[in-house]
Image 1 (cartoon, helix red, strand yellow):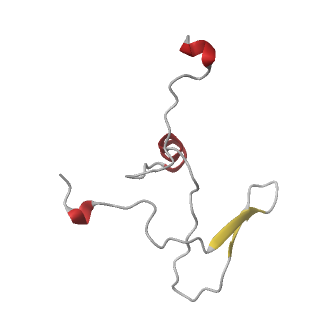
Image 2 (tube, one colour; image 1 turned 90 degrees about the vertical axis):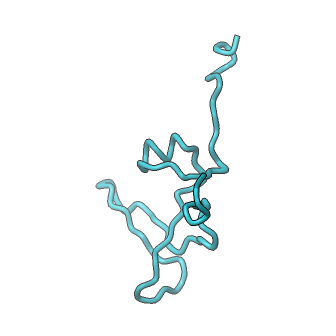
Length: 82
């Protein structure tokens, strides 16, 4: 069993976005801007969103330890279920 210090809560408590992104042009340039006043040294925080574990692994290279938004697709459609 994991020791209490090794248990990671997801998402981290008190984690609130303080930046947002927007695409600027067709070259794929993305701009990040603060959504509230920030001081030098403040950590920039932005949620990955409500994603499944397979999405996290494929696009971000990690899987959260506990993900309330994970899902399982048993059948892709009714035809495959029959």
